[in-house]
Image (cartoon, rainbow over all chains, first blue to last red; front, side, top):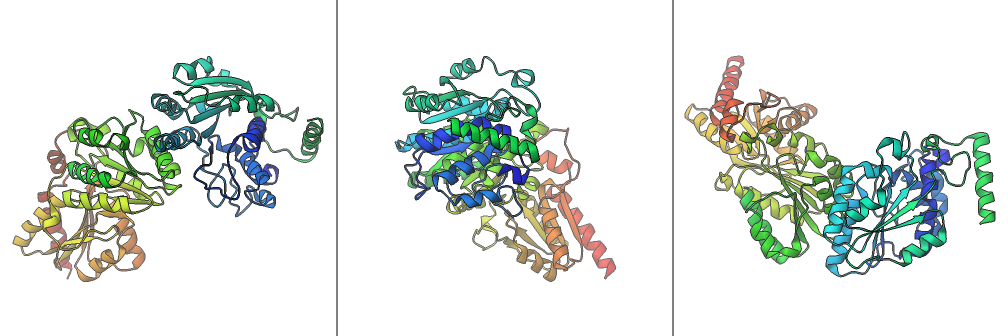
Length: 256
Length: 312
């Protein structure tokens, strides 16, 4: 998918793939036959550059035919490198510029609470986008208004665009920041499916606080030479690299 | 204009609980009554315009009709990308309101001079851009924006003239109101500066120059037929806006005329040519300072008409 279009961000997609898989497979109340059902859980991928992961999950869930995925990033395709809702059933919100998703999710959650609805709003953020002031504006707003139906999941792979988060703008103590802003926080291994599912089953963590799940992840997870590497934020695997990556991924699947 | 907007929105909110007003922590006393009467339809988002605008998008995606409110450039330029990517791309009924268009807050300095917003907002896709000329148009525009699906920008300024008394066209988004008729030239105006234009027009009438005056309250979508008729039927065109001459009303009208192949007898953009104003003062003072007031408009037109008469 990402390979044929050459858009990559493959490291960012692999770091969030387990989270997306558990959310779409086991957690989110969404129905491909009725993608706009009022009672559905809302999902926003705020780190829009991992859009291919959402498209793949939606395709697997039956929101559209899997063949469509082959058009990702190609000339004339609706499946843009950064996630877009236009013409793609199941995508709630288009993102791509960082720091937008949590505000939109907060608006949806505010509406849901006011309406007395029981659905939840999930927003997946990157760690890098926690540099954005607008993300913290939304964090302030959500706790002030006690949006307990809002769930922020941070894909904390600790590598952003040019370097590690630690060397760019250190986020630590990260969990403390969220909790001191009034959120109920849990930390998990973002590749351990049982942990992801377990923590989601505990939602809401509190009756009057928004929920934050800090998912510790590995950028490029699943392909040894991509793991923890800034390079694979951008690079597209070609030739032997592609074959080696596929061998490792298929091996991982067989073991799993 | 601002009070007319708030009063209109209050009466609409009473009947339509989808309507939500979000302020970026501004509107002292002005919004108190709305907040008290409609606590479930009012949010103070704090001094956080980016979140305010994203929030508005989320609410609108859930079926609300949202108005975001702040002054000068805060509800527009500060959160421009949220307006573009979130509001406009998702085509939601979010209406961005700026009180303090042009030099409304002239004494507060350049941070509070909204003098490029019309040009910038006009460039955004899926956005209806309205600069009412008077209290009545502000009321009508507010009603129209609630009813119209999709995003809007409502630029209000401190002018308090009521041009509903002149001209007989009803308010319709995308249709200019002809507020006076004449054949010597057409003055096309956006926003509250229309009050100055009307005073200029009566000065000109005393000199025997009779302008057609259009209130082009909607900059996007633009009323192209009215512009083309004006170029065909009157001697020349002058645009007036309390905004930079770069890419605003004047630019928009010029683009349409050039592409239509209909050349007016003369063409001139009255607007801010100075860039930033580091001088401060009241709205009226700054209008005089930058040749946007009634006398300057009348003098510019006299000069243009004189040139035209010499040519013919």
